[in-house]
Image (cartoon, rainbow, N blue to C red; front, side):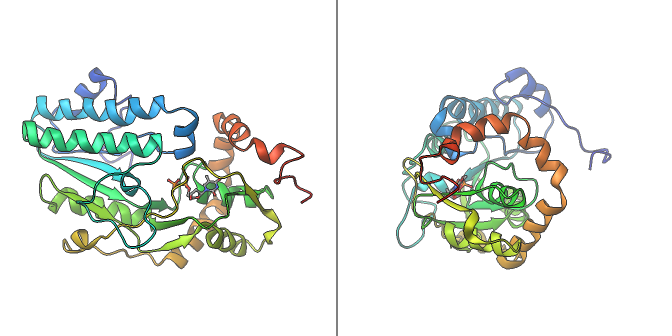
Length: 297
Ligand code: TYD
């Protein structure tokens, strides 16, 4: 990829107008994947989320305007709709975000749509469900649990583990984004879901089984504040463009577990840096001897 002549990488902050200005000049399209994404970090420090997710999106929209970029895709999340006990959200449903993260993403979606209405920008929005696959930063549940299990460390399940997420393999998500970028109707929103709704506890068992490990590594820890019970999106609109997920969840999960098992140097490096301080603060309970999370219980 790095050797492909059409590829170039600019290491910069999307809030930095000058960096954005020089990076986007002459572009056919902008796809905004840049975001602060981890809900727990947004609870301990919301400010970075508002800055990057809202103000950063604003900088990009202004660049689209100034340069007349022909296409702008905002990569958003199913979390903007909030939690739903039954049924699935469609694109026109009202937004009801629960966390500083999802509120920041909802704010960005509103800005994108307002720039369409006010300035006529050629925008699109995708709202994807929970991604999984290789190279995911080990703060997210799946890579955290797999890598902890590989190290014989506890798997911290929030609350009772009954929360439901709809898992989509990253390749299926990217195929959807590519299709929307090329064939989506301007000004439209497209939900992207894997159709794999799984309770956290079930997924935790799947991970342990895939590694041949027992349930003794599971620790029930204090619930995340404002923890959404279930996310679910209706993807009929995207399917009408001809998309459907290709990766069966059983195969995808097995391949993902194998990838982290086989790529230990990649995640060990991360887990020895900034991540460690984050983990110690976020999962303090795991280290406190009197808590439910104590290793002897
Ligand atoms: P996560 O990967 O953080 O994604 P999101 O919060 O965006 O859905 O979490 C997925 C689910 O797993 C969510 O219900 C929270 C839960 N979870 C845990 O139980 N323990 C953990 O340590 C983490 C990170 C998440």
